[in-house]
Image (cartoon, rainbow, N blue to C red):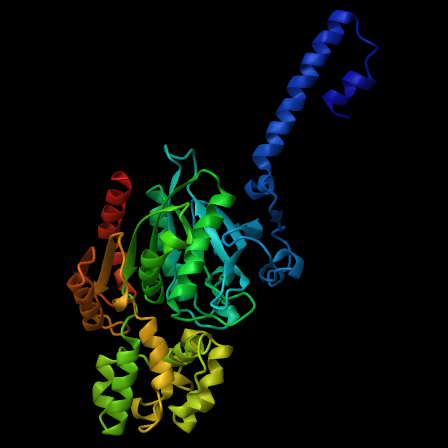
Length: 431
């Protein structure tokens, strides 16, 4: 029996002065209990957000009950705390299911994670980075928030990203990371569909503030590879999508661009028997092609049989169950020779039309953009990023470009961190 209970049960009725002292003790004890409950309660619970126990079935987390799906974009459906992966060391970590809007204008559930530094926030709230991850795949199992062990198919990449994100947390930034629409959650993933990615990245920033109200309204979009392209689309579109937030700029590491040019060049090379010779200039893109096709099919009537060889077309469904590491295997797309992919006379117009519409090179934006590129990158060739930046600069857009000699596609994450930190710090200091 607790001390509070004993005041009621074990003692005889108190005298008036003792009754007054007892009332004071009870008031203090009651306030302490309420404070303890508030401190230990999930942050989102105070805002009417359903809190899911960590022991709940992990796959159920990604399913939004039909009666809970309706709501404003960026609002939370449910959430739970994270202990260990995919959380970031040294932070308070949450997994979240939130609302966004797909390219048909329908509300969809999107998953992601939020990491908040320890201790009290600085004046104005925690500065926020909404991180757009690089390619993992289009199958639900490839969602980064599902990486809770080394058995996760893209663990080598997502664990590397988390090590860099941990540096941002130590520098005093909250880091939110979306899985993107349809990756982990029901529906198709719009791989490299810029507007869909932008909505997921921006709505993740809105959701992060609902989880942790001490996150400020100022934020930066940041992404790598696929996420680099997403970050540029966010720079161009987020202010209109979420005017209640203050976007200070975007950081794009090795951003995907000129996909349509690469596809046209690859098909032309196949038609003249030069596909193998052109391979170094197409970015080692064969293993990524089925993902690009699946993304294009989310917004247009793209029929792969119109432009793929029979062998490549038969292998397309592998993208629906495996992640990029599996697709790179010698028994999957990684085993296809460059001249075994495109039909030399196939009709690629519908496909390349979608890719051209989602090329970040054609965007305009008002907030500054920092582009970071490794010169030894064979996944996103430096010449592609050089050309994109040149197009932006010719249009008079605010672009800062840094390159790193001898640095490959993943190496740019760590190599560019000091420059990215200085640039982002300056953006927040100026606002």
